[in-house]
Image (cartoon, rainbow, N blue to C red; front, top):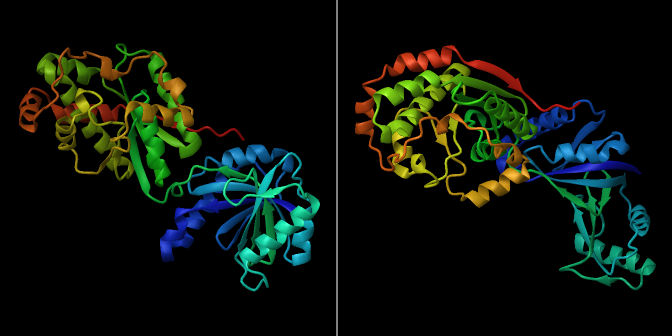
Length: 389
């Protein structure tokens, strides 16, 4: 008998002939997340088994595994050679003190085992009741559930607790994209959600020093570090937006300032995507949340780029977004009172139904190509990660 961690993945079962490629990537991501920890990782029929690790560090390892996209649960289990006698013995050693009701849940992946899952449930339930006659069997709402998995590798696994993981698809299985990281609550959540669908991230932050402070920039660096817990290493592009905003302020109608600003941001983002082989732009826009996030406004900003723009929180209200931000621990950083460039030269009455024709007419007062080129050429690049080992 030995102690192991059983790792359960979900959606990967739907991938058909490509499933082995997803699992291969998932295994690589797990080992990368556990860099610095001595352990071994093996695969057995719908499960990954982590073993030969320092049991004193088990809680740390589980916490890291919970951050790996593609895993849906981690189970701390005991592993032993499959035989009915050995299963009975190990089940009888489980402590049910202080518990009033229980259920046995068996998965017989090894179809050569002489008892069906249901038969084994009943038989092992009897083993538990022989030792704890006052226990009640409750199939629907038990206080304790004992899981027994009989696998095809000749091993049986026993566990009574599941640790929920991040779910989704393995990081890197969906390609790479660029996150517009503003420093607010929404954009880190958007990055997390798209990474959960398998996208690796780079990020771009637009700052307008001296109108925005050094602390505002540091806040965004901290946010990038916090989401890198889930998204691995992130290349952060910091782009100066000061001159662009000054020119917009001098040469464009006030009500269209935010619209023109967003269109230039999208052009810069697309240019960075092309330079860095990134396939899409990610924003934290939520429909109707502010003037620049109406359907018409988003259509006008979309019109200047030719690559996909993903808006994963488009249908979320603020409470939904805040809930995810608290879950991934970016919320407290996001609400620090340091302004971002979107607050600079903020118009009193921004247009909520802009048109492409009007935006293009106003942009004739600007040398858009020169502004975009200068911004991209003068970017600052930081490599952000949150590796602790």
